[in-house]
Image 1 (cartoon, rainbow, N blue to C red):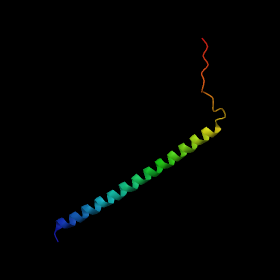
Image 2: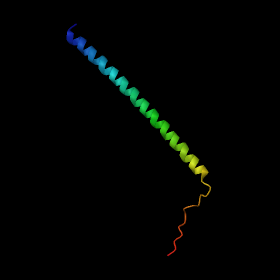
Image 3: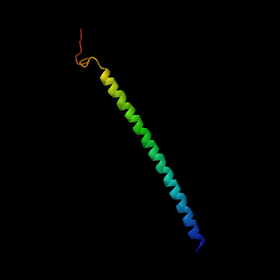
Length: 64
């Protein structure tokens, strides 16, 4: 076994660890985005449920 084999193993180990960290960060970002989207959906649903005048805004009254 040569020294270069040891370096190749060390490089592989380092790159493998970096990929694992990048995957973890990506998963955390996606989870946070999903939570945000769920919250926005719930807020939109509440807004629509609280709308007591569904016809409001359908007509425009203009006087000149």
